[in-house]
Length: 547
Image (tube, rainbow, N blue to C red):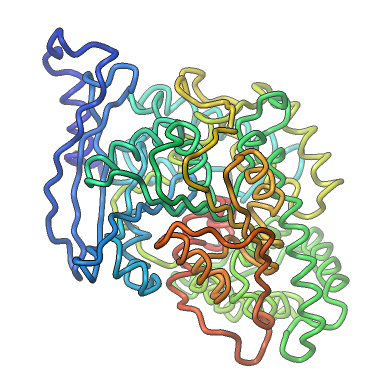
């Protein structure tokens, strides 16, 4: 199947190759506010595509497409404006996220706001970075393991990364050089104007916290409420002063994952028979990991019936994915117990399928060529500074494993394609400072035990932004608002988004019970799964698929 010739691709190509703009359209001219024509796209949602500058240094030249979805406010007479939502990634579709969770958001938000999602530039339905002719070709460039564990596998990873970067240099097109978070934040301000809002209201999860921090520092007087949840330290992300350490290591995700796994062990043992892997959980996990290093298991996917080898690398990747959502921890415990008991491969496949479902990783692709393979590095490598030779990545992986245990390597290699990524990418990246005094407070939300964006990232962002407020959640999983099902977090964030009133200083919301309680607080699996499906690393996706 050939690369789809969508309106999104045609828009940028036509504009780049079309007639030159009028002479009056100078580099200093502000971008034109796009006109939007919404059309119904099922279940009360409306969809649209609008134009934005490819390069904000030349805003009246080539244009790209930004794909949008909105759920109109349920009480139009009480409408405050639009709530712009980004679920993270990088590389996640805000259109898909809002379609899944829009009607599940708190009633107080649905009544007062149009809920608006967008695919960031370079991603999915917006003008996409596509480096191959088909999705199958893109997937084929990936190595045959989730992440490299041995020196031999590191060499295979190097070849894979070189092939991906070379393909993007040859075929990625103009969008390759304009996928930084700073450019996406400028798109957000253009969308604010297009939506008719005097000031932005924003909710950004995970990588979306970087979009929010870029926006707050570029446009400190143009938002009324801005929430960042599951927060990345922007200084560690961009790497000024630490470019000899890969981005996946320096943001500290492995430390967050290690601490979260420790909580899984503690809570599993405390739960006794309610946790299938209880009874010296940490010791049992270590023994299982050592066993899989020597003798991988076999697993049969219930959908395809195909057998696959389940290795130590797969164990670490599956565990990391499950840590993202505490409500699937009982499923993780059952899976670990079955691997330990060496149950038949088909039964093991059923257990893995349950984990996939809980993490939202079972949905069919919405496009013939979703650009998952190149979209995430397209953003990350545009934003961040990284070593350009292999040896520093290898040294960092060794050090991370010694320091952070199981998860040091998987996070170190998360964006290893950045080593070879075309150096023209990220020409408009923002390297700082991150300390703008904003006219309205930024609400920073952090989990104590987050396996992807550790709590210290939220603390760092709150310290950097002088007019911010930190709301802490002493619980587990990736991000908190509307994801953890915690009434304290949900109430405080909803109040802030609606009224602009920040929580009291120093507030720490306590979890409601344990993930292993016999009847834990119910949370719609579509909600937690929608965020996990967007934010888990590619290594997790591959291990969860049994490939």
